[in-house]
Amino acid sequence: SLIEMANAQHRLDPLDFAVHTGDNFDNALENEAMRYLDLLRGTTTTTGPVSGLACQPDGQSAGTEDFANDQVNACTSLPVSLAGKLRGFDPSIPQYVSTGNHDLLIQGNVAVLPSFREMALAFGRHFLHIDEFVNIHFDSRDRCAGGTEADHNGHGFGLVDETRRCDERVENDSYYSFERGGIRHVVLDTVNDDYFQTNENLGFMPNEGVTGHDVVTGLSEGALDIAQWEWLQAQIEAADANGQLVILYSHHTMNSFYNEYFDPLCGPPGCFSDVLAQMGFVGRDQVRAKLDTYRNLLAWVGGHTHQHRVTAVPSESSDGFWNIETAGLLDMPQESRIIEIWADPSKRKGVIALDPIGHLYAPGRELAESDGQHDAVVAAGQPEDRRVLLWFDIPAGYAVPGHGGSR
Image (cartoon, rainbow, N blue to C red):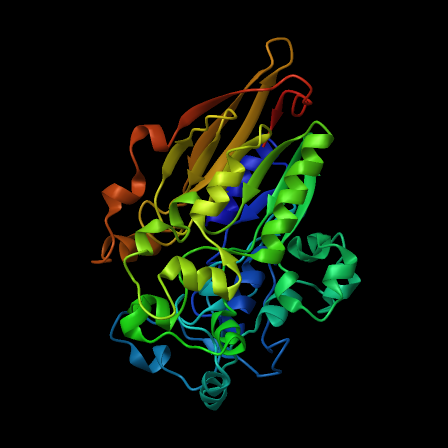
């Protein structure tokens, strides 16, 4: 339903591109990735492109007590009522993807260990590793080939530098950048799915008494590994040298990165910030301190918190930037955002216009409203978080974005 709404908007006023900011599926499973990509492309996939497992049609349960259709020992393809009827996004809208913690971690918290993969296989399912997650976005299933126009360069993953895309370090294949409307758009991978492997390499595994239960079972919040952090700084600085403004996109934003809140979780081998550093990641405090120095950073766009929230991030040495979060599609109010950027060359001022876009799928709204764990009022945000204009100055020496509006 949301795709149909977006396509209708595109026919009225064309969109330049779409960015899916992670948690595109729930449990790091191949069949979930297949369903998601089927929705994007308007296709119906019945065999796992990585595992080769055959998926049976989903009977689409008639109600919450219809366990016969809910619990099956095999992966499922799309519900029968939808198979063959999907239209997918208009192919003229480039679709770019970033990773969320639910895309690469079990229930968004637990790293996929080999034993978990064996258990899943017994039930006809396959957990995706990061390289498989990236590959599944390419029609050719070969990230090294860089994708095609039809698959939008592997939904963005084909835009990764070719040397990095084809080396043996698959954890560096999931972040990239592109240019549109005179702005450099940088898509990050803020998920720490290699947490357990990193700890094994360091020779220690913190127990629950050291860093807290949520941390031990996985890293649901955001951080950047050192290689990506250095790459991000180089991207912003290269854009600065070219007189370009920059927008960041990722699942976690400034408000959902690991930060000083976790410092009380101390013990051998140190406080959580120390553990994070030893693991080879940087959290919010280090990232924020450096981003404050860049004059060309315009905004950071993401999700994770499942709520509309806009935060001004001030800086003493620059104009700061806007931190923009958006509600989740399955949780009330079940909205995405249209983001438009307008600029006045004569006054060297611009505005980011935010406009929520919902969908009309009545059964989905009924389920969302019945979710006892979710606060629809908080998720919807205040009026200044929803339909709002965010003003910015264009410093001297920087190109004015686009020609009129860019969406």
